[in-house]
Image (cartoon, rainbow, N blue to C red; front, side, top):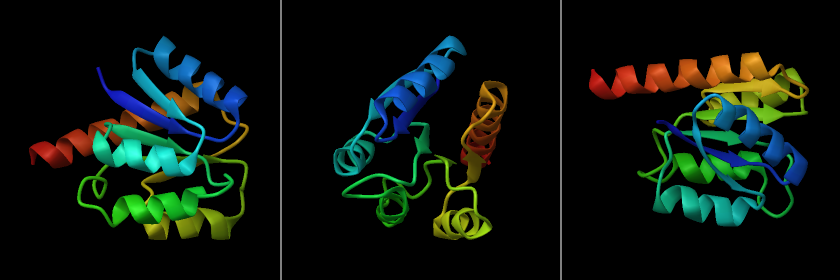
Length: 128
């Protein structure tokens, strides 16, 4: 069972994402704070990260940058889930190393499809 780590400062969004993922068979860890999430991600890297951009203290862009600069987090697939729908936001996160971007509001089916696709791609690259 794949382990997905959800990072979003909105507890309701964290609960929604966790519910969707758990109902589809994923193990889910969550955090609502960017700094503590980064420490947890690097201590025990998950199979995939769902990451919000707009968070206080340590925002998603900075968290992504720090994750990618650490050997433990460099290859963990990251799906950004954000209300920021601008082309520059999407392009910026992809340039920092995000693997995909989905805008809020999103379809639960599309979210799960993206998660599964990223996990399959990551597994294929690991086994290559």
